[in-house]
Each structure stands twice: as C-alpha cells, then as structure tokens.
Length: 166
Image (cartoon, rainbow, N blue to C red; front, top):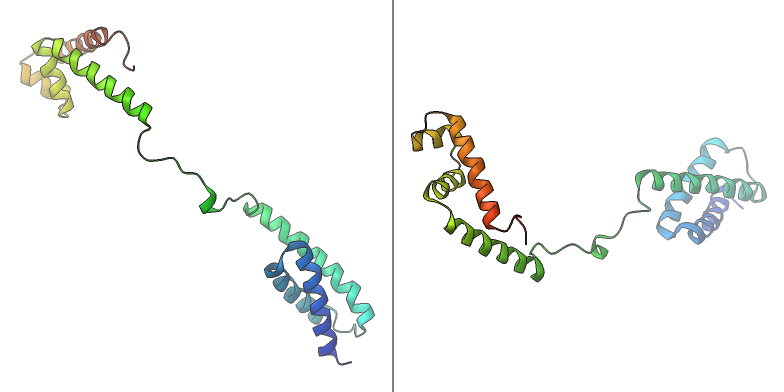
C-alpha cells in the first residue's frame, strides 16, 4: 500500500471518529488538520498500525482544543436567532390602559391648575430654559421661577392624587 492510500484510509477513520463526537462539518476540518500534522511532524512513520493510534490521539487533542475554543468564544451558549422571543415594540393592552388613565388624570389635573402654572408647564414642554421663562414672566429673580416650578409641580401632584402613576 502506498503512503497516499494509507493516508486516505486514515482520513476516513479520522472523519468517522470525529463525526461521532462533534459533527460531520467539524470532523472534516479536524481530519485535514490531523493529516497536516502527520505529514509535517511524523513523515517518518509509514505503517498503518503505527499511524492509526497516533492519528486518533492527535484528533483527540484537536477536538479538545476545538471545544475549548468554542467555550471561550461563547459559541456553545449562543441561541439561534429564530428561537429568541423578542418583546413586542408596542405596549401590552394593560400598559396601554394604564397609560391612557394616567394621561386622563394628568389632563384633568392640569385643567384645575392656575393660569401661571399652566403657562409655566407649557413653556417647559416647549423646551424653554428657566432664564427664558423668567424673561417671559418678567420675574425679578430666576429663583422665583424655581420656586413657582416647585410649587406648581407639588400642586399638580396633589391634584393627581399624590402619585404620578396609576
């Protein structure tokens, strides 16, 4: 038997051994790696009886290395993208109802506020700074606007029942 025939038989056995433990696609790669090692480092070994145990020992080392690499890269713990359950981007019916109730309570509470508080909230919602709000109202100090803001928020909270959520 020629060296090429021996290596071809050896390759079949290596693939069968590795495929039984790791899968066919990985087994093909491992067999190729083992044959390269045998050619480069064990070119002097010519008998099939000597090459078979040697090649099986090398493939065991290669499989252990592949497993370590897989664990290190997190490949064993990855879930398939099709199997992941992603949350719906829309709110659940319960959350929608709770949000609607909060909006209704907030709207009713804002209607009961005084004119200055409503105007203050309107300006804040428009993105105005406290300095701009001070100028709008003609307040003497920015601290006055801070005080108005704190009092208006407290009044709104009391009108909503003492809490922001339902």
